[in-house]
Image (cartoon, rainbow, N blue to C red; front, side):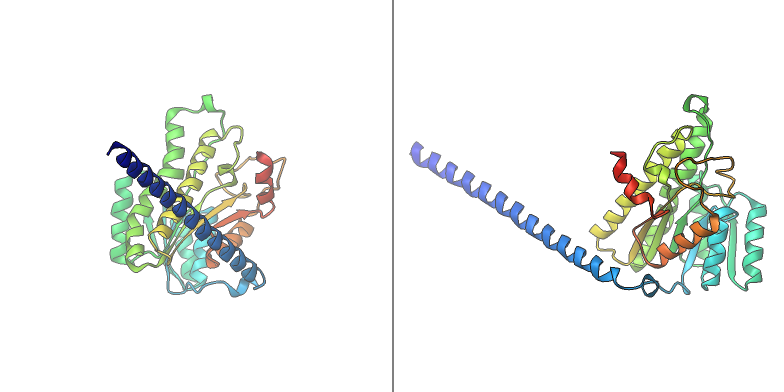
Length: 295
């Protein structure tokens, strides 16, 4: 009796192991098929001029944080020219007025709101106001950023917190405010303005680099979550530019490796990446192979 019982247990264990190995093999084959499919798809699309892959955004409502100056202001103007409803958030009231004036002169549609994105409650309150006055936001561009060039031990706690709250925490609050409406329609686009500093440490920018590393991770995770839940109509784009000319954030910054970028050039690349539904856009393109040298 004991021998039969042991034989039965051994047989059951063998069946279990076989089923586990079969599951692993099936998953491997499925993954391999997906890799080949997406590889063939990327080759096919590489032969199509990118200008034919851009989407129409004329009926979209775009919200841009930090839209009162720099990249945010220029993006607001470019989307207004595309026929979008443009909503801009900033704490710079003068910058908001200037951006709105420029868009109004182009006969565009622009709404401005003073909002400190460090304040979670303020973000949620302003988001509700936007939905009532403008409608659901379909393109969210988390652009607002802050950098303070000092060595780590020279930074006080408040400066570090401010960097993390503006550059990282705000992405969580704005996405929580607007993503549910996008999911309800399975339509939308979330854009995170990260940085190449999110891939490599820089002297004097320890907190800034940490905040951008976090944005890169958050953006990729959010994209994977939406795909896993079959929300294929919601696109997520990470934009990682190098340092820019003519912005308050990087005034006085010098570069020995890559040239400092012009704001207009970066905005054109950002707009193009959004219109093409790109997952990641490195600016300049040449930085991509340099990532492999880091290791």
